[in-house]
Image (cartoon, rainbow, N blue to C red):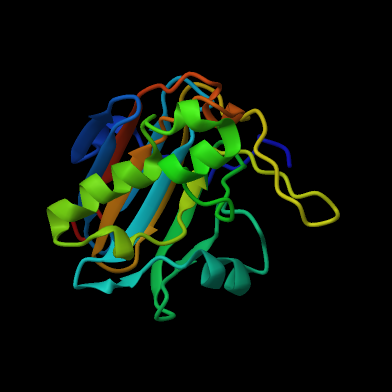
Length: 218
């Protein structure tokens, strides 16, 4: 897929954001996005995978479903126009802008266990996305069992004709972003992926930025 030409109009001026959060390399983040507001996730330096989950702020049991999102779209990737669907079948958000063009929602999040199986025992105690998610969701009264398959913004996961997935070099450039308009009050949980053993973030985790824009009603 070409990484160009995924802008949606109008393009928002980042100076109009009502919140700005800088998320350090390898760190988690979470925040509320009210219905009608938009959240922009910016890959500041390029090739940085950003693992992301969404929960209904009114009921955390109503949460992002990668399976339902793929099924409803009839498409494997997330990009402009994608409707993010919950496990209860509710519309959680719509992707309204995308300057990268490649976002995965099939490969899941890295964990200490998966890293050990894939890369060897010496990686067992390296930081991983699942641990970031656990740390962050506990702030909201949830636990490890509440972590579900996620979106990997900016992660390049081509699908071979035989259906096999591969994680290869990212295509995002410095400053690329994706923007989602909330269709319900959302809790957004991010792991700014710390993975250094595959090319999902160029073997060099870097900071990202999160902007939140007011909705039409402010």
